Length: 217
Ligand code: MD3
Ligand code: FE
Picture 1 (cartoon, rainbow, N blue to C red):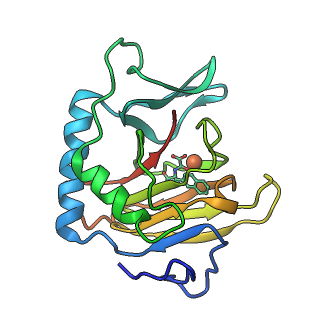
Picture 2: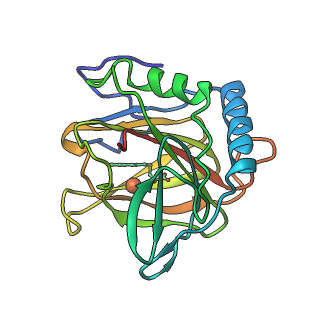
């Protein structure tokens, strides 16, 4: 991992200038690490399968699951974190050690070295899936960052402003990339504009999976 916390430069694409509060580690997770993370994802998905959540306007385009003390969920009643699985009193599977290790490594040289996630929302993007511009505001403490790890297909990540109408930039994300968002950027609008089907380097994974670590409670 490249490391210069005071100077978050580390851009894979020099054309993209990331705003303050973003710490980008392109390719931080190598092939073996990605394989181990994906094995842990499959174990989670065996217990708590990926499903499309219902929203006010239909269904999420990405299929989702969670692990940790709480999981993000949505139904026509609204968005929230809940400590049990959808339509079940069962808890979400625990955060695997390998997830906690990756999250700790990701924040080690950021302004949030003590970040410990209590939730991980996993998004699966199949062919054509995307995620519209939104803010993450269901967590209790916005002083805590969000950490994300990408697996599988390349995806075009949209970084917007602090209002919906601000202009947005695209950051192409690849399998193994790690991104931390905090501080002034924690409440930025963001989304996934496009997933490039067939680009996944991970054996057995067709599609894109993002692990998004949060302090939700
Ligand atoms: C940027 N997921 O799960 S990474 C989400 O790749 C989500 O699946 C995208 O947006 C994905 O909510 C993007 C996660 C992420 C989370 C919070 C952010 C990116 C962020 C807050 C500010 C800026
Ligand atoms: Fe988000």
